[in-house]
View 1 (tube, rainbow, N blue to C red):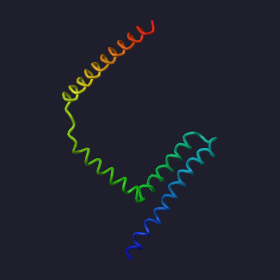
View 2 (view 1 turned 90 degrees about the vertical axis):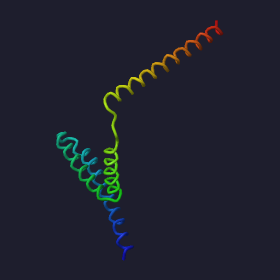
View 3 (view 1 turned 90 degrees about the horizontal axis):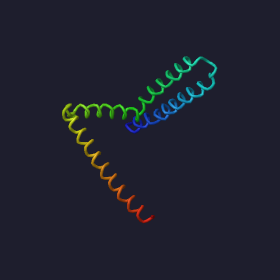
View 4 (view 1 turned 180 degrees about the vertical axis):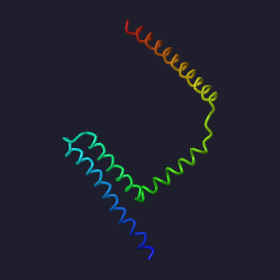
Amino acid sequence: MKAKAEAQPVRLDGFKWALVIALIAVAVIGNMYFSDSPLLYRVVGVVLLSVVAVLVFLQTLKGQKLIVLAKEARTEIRKVIWPTRPETIQTTLIVLAAVAIVAFLLWLIDLMLSSAIRGLIY
């Protein structure tokens, strides 16, 4: 009995995926077919079909997993301790100083290598 209960959502899942693909195809083909219609109508049609496709997608197994993932990600983001403004400014200044030092060193190496190659050529 339990095997039948688990097999049924998988079968319906395939139907839902087919419906999602069909809705997207209808949106694309309808947009091309009604290319003479005003843009506003076509945009509204595509947006409505896309919203329905997303709602059907969220009913699939992958959609449910996506919802769970989004909820868990939101929970994890709430746990993050964000830096204060002074910490952010200090870190930014340190990064800028490190970039300036590395840029200067690369410029110095480039200057020496170009002088050495110029000395070999002339």
